[in-house]
Length: 597
Image 1 (cartoon, one colour):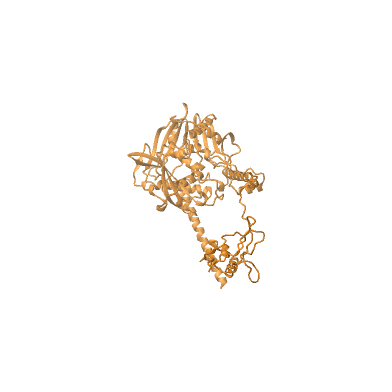
Image 2: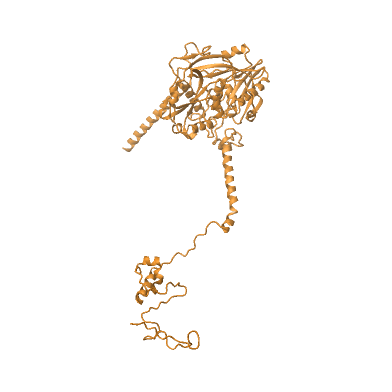
């Protein structure tokens, strides 16, 4: 069987096909049409891309839609001449049935480019200004809270309504002493002038006399931690003495011998040295007798109590009967501090005695472990200062005796400080100490100043917490940490030259006064001290003055009524009240049951 090529036209006149072919290339079929039989006609549009002209080999995966779509067989299926016309048209129809419209939504416009940049440019400075303003507002709020205790808005309010509204924010601080109308104010010294003072004294000072007896420190307390806490004991039988300067027989003897011109105690000197850090009001009585100067404290002075959260930004409850009020916490802190200083000692009878016994104790009296060092400093060629300094314990360190002071910090409610000692003392002791330095800066600075005045080799700080936040009678010792006084002073930014500069300036001012009695009062509302001239019989038993109301007076524990007895009385009263409340509740339940029946 041969292949019929057909009639090939011939152009005898030139190149190219003739104008009229001699015979058609494809013979006509029956019914019209000029294309060959069994050759399918493939219609297509101009926008459709043409692939191969003809595929003379059969695609074995033609019936597989996935392979066909992957290899592009759907587009060229009509040119597969291995199939007949019906199969090709069926494939095209099947291809059309699988066609799906895609989402014609334009893609989101990116937030960058010239148009976006020009639209956002005017908003950036505005947003930055808002952040700066917000920062300024926060700083103003913080500054206002920090100065709230110094500037009492309620005292300077124009009307009673404004005063009451502002009084809800911060409690009113009262003066430690009632200023009498006959007192004359001689000078007013702002604390800002104290920060620039500096004076150097010879170190170490001269020891004139040491009295008392010391017990040894129990080193087992250094291993206490919150998981191995120890209950705080009560020492009701031991007596603690807070004797002022002029009532000290040793100081009277030294003054009679002209050993110095200025006399004071370490508690009074530390109050003066750390006065810029104080917030609560305090007062010191100054007596000029001849060429001598005596710094005294009144009976019932604020200096006998330990302040709690004095420099905190969050004020304490103002109600005096609240167990977390400033007055209640001061009594509790003094009680805790006294018991702690005796519990951490070895009570085996071994004591270190000194030149003279305790000058304030009677023979056979059980007194606390304390030694009084009467020391002398040279302020200038004509002025010497003698102070009675205290140390609380002794320890043998590498064969040498080391003196130490013992003090206790007390936690009353973690909600006020924001730091739970039981959780943070082991892992974040630095954070606990930093919080205490923020809330009790004045108290810690005074303890450090007293340790420096006594030349103590070590100062022990105990962390004592309540057994329960609502139980202010039972306490536990969580930890005891020791510090060297000079290193701790550098850590809390306590400058010894500035401390002595403050004392020297006060002494110079008082030395210019006439003979008489004066009182130095810390202003309760402003960071400043005032010097008043008072009558010679002021603060004596026969001196009659208008006292503050009894509920507003701050009375420290006396020898007859020590902190332990106060805490016992308070605990008994609370127990009686709770029992009465429980009885009333039980009767109420019985009445309700009877009514129901």
